Image 1 (cartoon, one colour):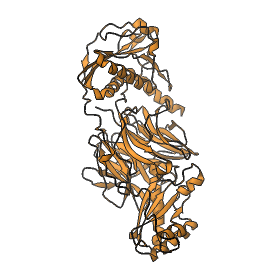
Image 2 (tube, one colour):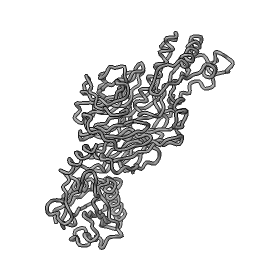
Image 3 (cartoon, one colour):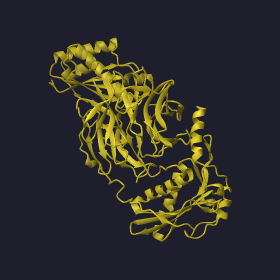
Length: 442
Length: 167
């Protein structure tokens, strides 16, 4: 356990060069991570400068979204505006580093917003305050006003990347199941939102049970299971057009637990016939399917490796559910989970380095991660019922479903850092379950 | 001051078109397992009400299990006799699980349970073509506490009558 943590952080440390305040000339400003304990990097993000009064609301809001993204990652700490000694009034004027040093802002984010018709143009610069220099070069982003949050997320992703050396994850979306009503009459419908809970939109009505939506590798389509026909069957939904169709070759068979392969054309899923669930793949263009497993046990919850060559899945062939890895064409599977309890819903990280899973042991549920060979198992959460992990686009954060106990029990989305830090709820209008995180948007 | 690189992101049109419920048909699936809800008089042994209440429309299972207990056998024996005597009916057996376990596993487990009940009815002479199965996993609990007393009621296979002669 301790080793796993150390290894992970060592991996990061090579990317995240330690840069003590005042010695930044030795290297760029970077976040300090030591053995899993992080000291959040203090930054200031004053309201962006509005070119015209009409742009001032966007200028303020964009800075707030950027700050919320950075703080929400758990890697940054914002210096509140009340501490500021001086403000920024001219985007192109020289920065008075002394005033920002005095309040210990290691990074300063400055920006300007121009509004022309419904077109927003945002310029920004990030500064390494103690080195007294810019962090990378300034950037300009444009878009229409209804996309202002995306512009802010892109700025935050850029700053996150410059300060961590890793890809960002803020300009991304989450598809999930929105839940209303009591436990014995729960209404479920597909919904999609920005990763931070903004811009929720519903993709289906609540007439039929819908379960476990999964994004395509490009984020344009979603696979999910619906009881629209009276039986659980896999559907694919075009997110932009909000058009959907059933993917089934056999009306008598239940199909569920689908996921895309990295090629975006092949899917893997469970099909249940005669009470027995096995894994199949299907080309969703041709409808051609192929059976991968043929065992009397339950085989479900499959997930492809990022290179598409392997599939991790859960099976109770040993008696209780465990995790197995096999070639994506089927064949012999290798068991990778050996700890106490039962393992399910494995999901390969987009980086390929870890598999996240649900673990049930001694009356509790956990979200955990392990290496793809099953080594270095680490539990990140514990509660009455945690399940269904999904990875952020950069493989740093895991979102999952947490359901509370009892007759009034309700499902909510939570996120946690892959190191186990920064556990927190994700804002949704109602109950929510089964999140699937999109790739970074283009 | 370093030069300003320009990157244009086309944000317009990337947000979803707003969508209302009116886009979807109001077709209802059998998610509640309603089947024939009224079903005649409890005193009429050929009525769906008699099947449901007097014989018993459901059998229960142990944690993680799908084997048919002696108690469940007695209920399914009664169901089989009724179905053999009332040949116009077809049934859907709904398999369910309690909330312990992941969604995917419970879907598969519910399918196992529904199929175990189906196989038993077939062994008692009911034609397989009359019996459909569907699993609801943990999606449709009838008891909502998070204790074994509720879980025991939720680990069930329910035989729901459909079609046939309504008396």
